[in-house]
Each structure stands twice: as C-alpha cells, then as structure tokens.
Image (cartoon, rainbow over all chains, first blue to last red; front, side):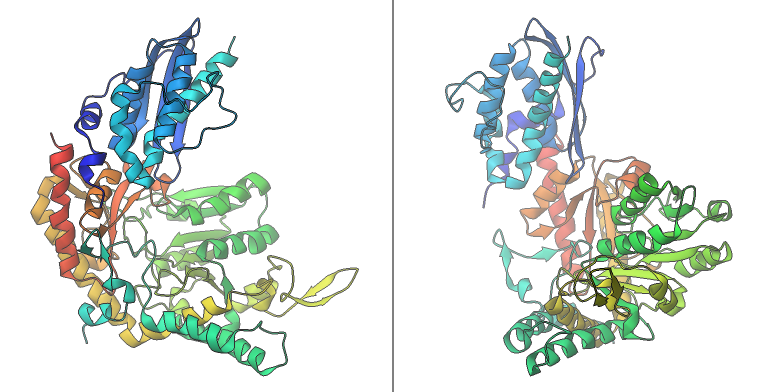
Length: 156
Length: 410
C-alpha cells in the first residue's frame, strides 16, 4: 500500500499551509485563466503578467485540496522570473513526472521529454503518481498556467 | 424484527474483501450500493439459462427471457405501489428517466416562459435537463430555497408555483439527507395546476415507496443504489401521461409499424424502450426488489434511523466544534447521508486519509454544485449508510478521521 507520507511530503504541506503567490493581479496587463476539475470541484485561477517573454509576476486563487493548492503554490514559485520557453520545458518535465504523455501539440520549442530539466522542489509531488486519482489535482494548475500563457501570447 | 447487519453482510460477497489490509468499511451507498448474492446469481443465471432477445423470438428461450423481463417489471411495480407493470418504463438510470420526461412530456408541453420549479438541493440530474429546456425552449427555471438546517424553505411556495407547469423535487437530498415533504409538495403543485416529478433515487432504496401515496405524476429512481445492477433505472408515470407522451428514442422495440412514410408506436411502456433493453439488469433489479422486500422496507428505514442517530451522536460527541454535519439534526427527518466538514481540511484529503483505514467515503460536490454554493463550500466529505452498515462502521469512520490531524493541522 502506498504510504500517505509519500503523498503528503512536508514540503507540500508547507506550501499548502503557507501558500506562495496567492492573490490576484490587475487584468490587464495580466491575463487570467480558470481551471476546473469537474470530478471534484477543485478550481484554480491563475493570473500571469508576461513582459518580453518573461513571467514578471504570477498569482493564483481558487479552492481545492492540499495537492492542488500546494501544486499551484510550488508552480508559481518555480516559474516566476522564467522565460516562457523555460516554463514550457518545466511544464513538460512536470507532466512527464506525473506520467502524462506529452501533448503532440505542446507549444514547447524544446524536444525530448524534459528529463534534463531540474524540477527542484516540484520533485516532491512525485509521490502523487502512486495515487492516480490525485494526479489531476497536481496538474490542474499547470494546465491552467499554459492556458493563461497562450492567452497572454495571443494578446497584443 | 430489527435488521441484523452482520447477517446481511454475509449476503454481500464484496464484504469479504480487504482494502489496504483492513476490512472494507463501505460508507458510500448514496453513490452506489453493493450487490447481494441473490442479485449477482440472478444476473449470472439469466445469461447461463435464458439469454436471448425479448419480444421477438418465437422459440422457448426467447419466451422465457421475455417472461423474465416482464416479471421484473411487475415486481418493480408492486414494490412501489404502482397498479400495473405497464406504468414502469425501464431506462438506463434515474438521469435518463428525468431526461426522458424532459424530452417527451417537456418538449410536448413546455414553451417560452413556462415555469418549471426545482429546489436548491437537487442533483445535477434534476437540474441540467431543465437548463437544457431553458436554452432550447425558453422555459423559466425557478428554485425553492433551503433553510439553514437543510430543509426546503416553503415560505414562498405559492408564489413560486404560480403558473408553474412542473414541480420536480428530490424525495431525499443526496447531500444533506433531508427528507422532503413530497405529498405536501405534490398537493401544492396540483393546486397550482402543475405536475409533480419525484426524484426518488435516494428514497426508494431506503424507505417504503408508494407512488399513489406520494400523489406524484412522475417518479424516477435507479437500480444500482438499491442492491440492483448498474445500467437500469425506472420511470413510473400515471398511465394517462405515458399514453399522451410522444416517444423518446426511436428504433426497434418501440414501434408498432414502420413504413417508408413513417412509423407508429408500440403500447406503453415499450413505446419508451427503443432497442434491446437491459434484460439481465432488469432481472437483477427484480432480484434486488425481492431481496429488499425480504428484509422489509420498514425495517430498512428503522435500521437507518437508528444508525444515523448513532453516527450523528458519535461524530458530534467525539469532535464537537471540529466537525460540521450539514442537514437536519433529527434522524427521523433525514436519510443516512452525512455530509460533513472536518477542521477545515479539504474533503479530498479527508477521504484520502480515511481510505488508508479501508473507510470509503465520497469527497466532492456530489453532483450538486448549486447546493454547494448555497452551503458556502466547494466540496464536502459524505458518509452514507445502508443495510449492511452498523455501529462498527461509524466507529471506524470516527477513529480514522483523527488520522488527518498530523498531516493538516500543524
């Protein structure tokens, strides 16, 4: 039986109890995207402000379980200050860790599976894979972020 | 005689299995119930001895299989106090049964501005079909609100029913457990000139059902929540309504004649059952009805009232202000469905921790998002009980709940 400690790692619980970058940004200049997990009702709202292809600021809101909230917090910390290219590489590497097949239409300019990307703290979410029902909780914020980025890039 | 859950558990093969090395503590019967041996055997027996298509073949197997299907229909009719099997339409589930009413009676009778009244505690199955008619036909959807303790707030009932064509209400809330005053609502609906649809999905498995007593025009429920197989649900309706309603899906089985120019429909109930019906599932539902009848529905209800009382006392005494149990506080006013919030820990996390102890509860919005909004939460944990549960299951839930603290209360 997979251990609950594999799922609820201390660093995850820390992000859950003390979320980073929780809040809102003015839109515009930021863009806002919403993600829902229709099965469980989790919702994540991502605000992201891109300047010259760099994530200048990011905030998240919404409500959900510890995994979805911690994943949002960890993601926001990981992508702040990164270029969109780096962000997409992280996204691909994260989803690969979550056992999700890469999307052939993924906008990442990078090839490969992202194995060369350092995930840092995000590695802590690896234990989620042992609890398949929770994978969507962990990836919801990433899906919502890429949606926000696409929207930001489409906005002149 | 009072039910003996230990004896009943012996009828349910799944109760032998373990989860994570612990005994199965199944508290999610509002989602689906387990199946007793006689139901499983009836389905197997059907495939082993009778399997053939119904209402078509002239050979012995087909005759027997048709008889088995129609016998099941008659059993269901008797179980809910219907006067004849022809009032029983088999559908895929309760959701399809409500959609059937919306698509046939609704499309034939509802137009722009026609009010349909539902309540804030409905399952999505009794919301979305009416939303669809709002979009497609411009009907007006009205909502009966709920009070703080999870009852329907009927203060404005007369105003809400003014001009209404249909009142469609869950007999028991799948989230709060509230037992709604169906007869009172049906009388009020009829006085206002509206028809009454009762979603009995959480009622028929748990309380004696009498469609005549309910004074309803339509009653729907599903087989899999009442010890029956998945894939079979029931619509009961007054014969004159079924006669007048246009058909639902078109195809084989539902026709009297088909020509290049058109078709004529079969008699009710077959008019609404296009294609090969869920025969084995109907036979299984018939066996489920026999099983529940053997237990006695009055006894089932008594057992659940006692167990719900025990659960409310146990959880409240043990956790006090750390637990909020939604819905009516009196066991006599509710079914054995307990939606709760514990120490602000998200229900998914609560359910995950409980699973480690073999305790199965549902976490989420329970297909009742408008109600969740009224309750001011995005999700709840829900423990729901049935004939095979006893106080030891409630104790297991209460014991395992505290295991969440080390993770989330830091």
